[in-house]
Length: 242
Length: 218
Image (cartoon, rainbow over all chains, first blue to last red; front, side, top):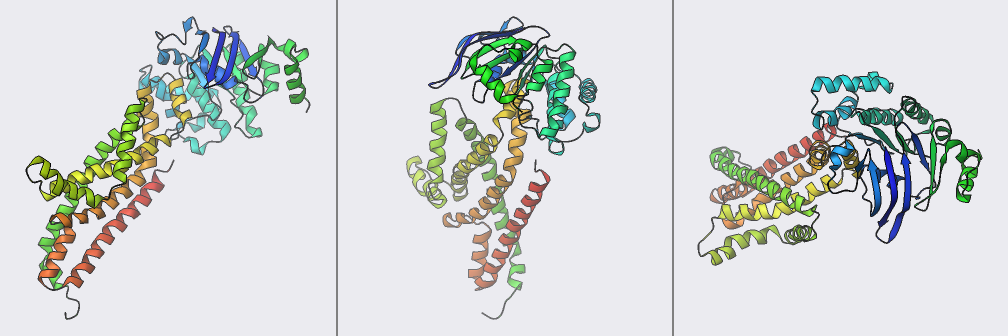
């Protein structure tokens, strides 16, 4: 579904991504982890072309992201994305946030879009919050609306860029629960996160990045039981000590 | 001068009203022209092309560094020398106001657009919206809310500045008050009255801005 091949990227002189290759198969959940500044967020933003790659190739469902012939809006409409800071549109209600792209991109009718928005809000446990503005929602609720917004386009895959990093601890689980249920429904997911509990329960594979390079790309159990790279061992020992 | 005579104000009300009409007309036209030119300049300032950005930035720096009065003199006294025919005082003032205010409106609009977080644009693009739609549906509505208070305050300032047209013989409100006051030897009454009128309009406007600000706060 998602193939990342030998991708490199520079910010000026600084190389943020070094020859990264990995893939996400249909229905697979891949967690990308690693220390801050390791290039995880940059890599996931390359998948839907929010960041440009300088070398290598990324294809999503056979479509090359970097090709000048590719219509990025069309491609992005098929890939859902959830951001660290939620990025709900503050001047729109929860329902309007979800309806915007279906109305403008898929040209759905207002009723169809609204009905679908309400279904999705129910799915993320927020039926009663359709007409609230983001300012009147907690962080966890905002992130669940953001997930519903991404799902409204019926995506073939979902990208999560540190979806729980900006949340208070007591709100992390409500978001992870929604993500877990998505994964159980067979959604193809690429998830940048520090939540190792989520990774150990839900992920099929774990990709570990450090200093812009993929250091380890293993099935979940292999990663947690006997990681091959020293750097991943160190990372895990620090993170799992508590 | 014997006491404070309100009669003179009532007697000369038609002349004063006519003056206020000129002041308001100049304000409205200058806002319309200044906002339009300012919006264009703001778009240029945010352009991806360096030369275009530099052009707009230079314009802003230049016109913000010149006194408005000097610009009015330019269009009233200097430009007619090159053109070979005179420019009416009102027109000269209007051109000067539009060019001058555009620089300020440009900066207000630009900072309004830039006040919207980059993440909002990314979120919009990520759902498949084209860039234009992201601007229209997501960025501009937020930018507009952020800039409306500053824009309105700038308009109030502009209204006060229109009294400068006095120097090129345009009979605006202040000029009318001055003419009446000199004619009837009652400058005190007229100057106090003029101050009250400016104060009421500008203070009222500023209060309105505060209320709008609260209502549309995000």
